[in-house]
Image (cartoon, rainbow, N blue to C red; front, side, top):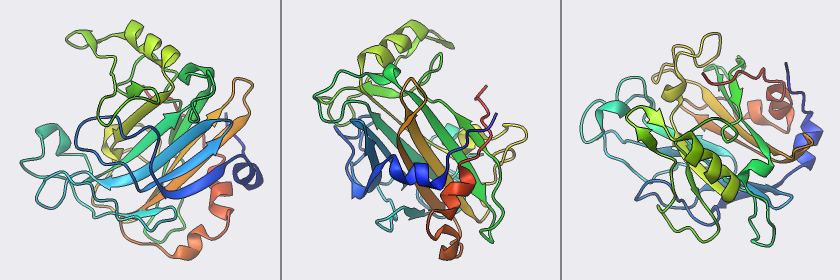
Length: 264
């Protein structure tokens, strides 16, 4: 099944802000600065996306975004290959992450929580020449059985998000997760393309952290009738591709027809 969203719809559904902070703050992990997000808002919903240097050439974490102030981030290829990066971050993972934020009551005057909307994160990869766009994966990151997101509300401070956790080793707390999306309006996470390596038949199958090209991430929110309320898109250049590729809304129109593949 394809989700067909025209460029005009994408342009009209959202108010865009560049180089901005998300609300209320960056609530996942510790030591993560706010800022350098692209922000899309509509119907009191705020969506934020950015890319970040997760581990630098010395394998240390950084709050470096290499942002052009509009919609594009430039990152170095490669993978962490030693300490202080943890073992799990090495191997198939890139040195960079993309980070997303959802706030369904950004002005604090409404009552909508996270499960009052549906969402789609779509992840794509272009080839080094900027013309070979591949079908990738798309899924709802919130309305799922369980995920390790950080949750909060408009009063949650930096790094103080709540996660669902586990009830036993390897057994996620699905009841706690359902409660968190029903009673909170903020969710955030920091993801690596390497986390999704191995999805067969997609552009992320056999993910190569050294491959040149551009990665595209789109985050959208829909009301329960299926109407889009906000959508945000960022580009992450590993080896810069011609800027003409992203001229106007043509690229948004191309990626709008992504085939949806749910995470396993």
